Image (cartoon, rainbow, N blue to C red):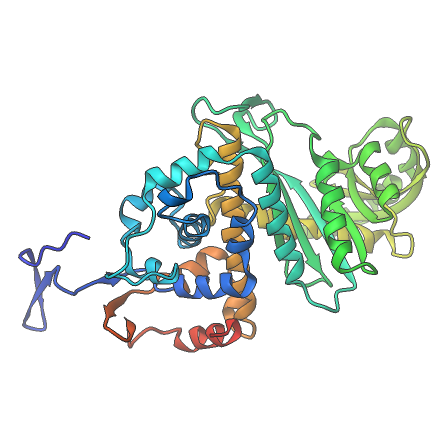
Length: 450
């Protein structure tokens, strides 16, 4: 770390006193919260589980950085907002990150540099990546409450724009961009907070590629720990097709899937649509003021490729004078059509908002390597960082941060400045005495253990 104590910077005086800034404060970090992330990782055993799945073919006599010591700083840095391996040109000497990774800030060697981390990204193979993804998923399932009786699996795809000549990036007309089309999987136990279980990177024209394999593996991992829990698959109309429905029947799981409109569905839902139109016509002024007029119904439907009939819920909605019917295929026979559709709409919070946080707050779109497998490896690192943020969020139960977004947790809890001192017997991180969230820090530390 470059230190230059000769530089002084003068600023306008305050209350008659001169203001001077100098680079002479000692070793100071802006990311003391990395220690909390390290505690979360130790509690979960996440990075060690990931590292154990990568076959290290390096000559052991020449290895300076074991696999876990390569993955851990990278995952912690992503959680702290440093999404690029290039950041390790200077992060490798950061005192708080070194302590979080089990190294003394001054007397121990620096962390791995950017070239070393980049070589790792390009060295992993498909088997390593598959095993890493499963290790992450197992850790996520393993931290769910023991008394879980119902688990909702939310599945959704999103666009990951590409800028360059990455492998398998294609033009996707729906998103009007050259992109990848990753698939994100979320778990919601007992109606509680959602958990990101994993993400599969797919080419830009993937369609439904990999969907059934992801569902099958997610169900297997959940049932491994909760053999009696009810599992419900929830996804939008892109997944409401014969193959996914048949898989749900084969696996014995419930489903609530969007369904694309067609002439036959429109005909079968005529009664419900007419009810909505009549309701709107007799009280037009009221509905124009309230904005939306809705009616719900249900009927049995069998597409030509389906093996049997399925229950379909219709929502006939009139907005600004226009009729807009929506359909959901589900096996929620005991629920009213309105409650069944409301359950389907819950995927907006569980999947769509989760993906927004994953993309924006956790920089999951940083898939700029040329090799497709290297980009999938990067995506898993961002998944792991998101899992650790979720552990912090759970540890903050009872505080305002229990429902905070990842960006808020990072800004208020992780981006905490401190002066780092190393003595023969102790390493001190002297944080600000005026830090406003000291009690929250104490709560999280106590929940994560020593």
